[in-house]
Image (cartoon, rainbow, N blue to C red; front, side, top):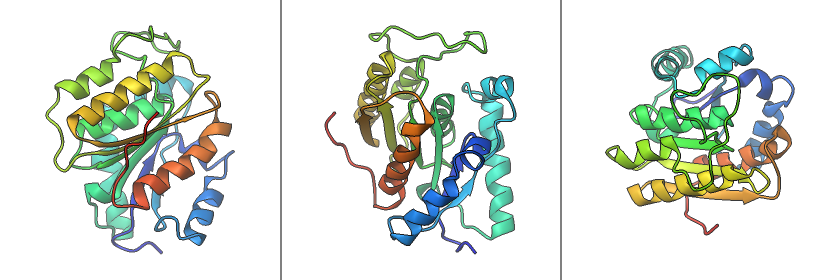
Amino acid sequence: GPRPDSPVVVLCDGDMWFGRLALEDTLDALAADRAVPPPVVLAPDAVDRLTRWHDLTAHDAYVTFLADEVLPRAAERLTLTLRPARTAVAGQSLGGLTSLYAALRRPDRFGAVLAQSPSLWWRPGLPHGTPRPAPADETPWLAECFATDTPSRPPLRVHLDVGLHEGTMVDHSRCMYETLAARGDLVSLREYNGGHDYACWRGGIAEGLVNLLGHAGAVRPPF
């Protein structure tokens, strides 16, 4: 069973990761290699497409659900000691957007973020259900939120991951990287030769977890 000081990962789209993609095999391999301490992964289902769009677009009620319902219930049931430094929030696409937003709003709960191909084109007012790619030179709304927010102390640890075939999402991820670095957060950005899909994210999630949970903090490599 988990130890009281086990790291905790809140992962979006749990039905995908523990259904089709067998993330448990990746976690077992990381633990066997001693790459990371075995984490407790809390992975709420997305339910359906429309619910996912509703919950994973910077929705404060969903962040509250993760921070004040999912985490405390798991801590009570599994006797976990919740510390932001040992608690990461992770997601892909809109889940990546939500992961960053959750850490912005609740640094008291989430001290680390794994955001893969985050949908930084999103901003309030866009209709649900249809991606609306933003120009490459447009500062993402969420980057603006981080830039004007009081930086967390201790700083957030963030691992960003984006494919070079994802168009303007590459520019937006670089902008987020620069924004977080300017705030003093510990941030890394991995760019890979791939696109916006789970085939790429399966390898990236392992690297991100090692970066965030296997070391004292994230690093800042060049692009």
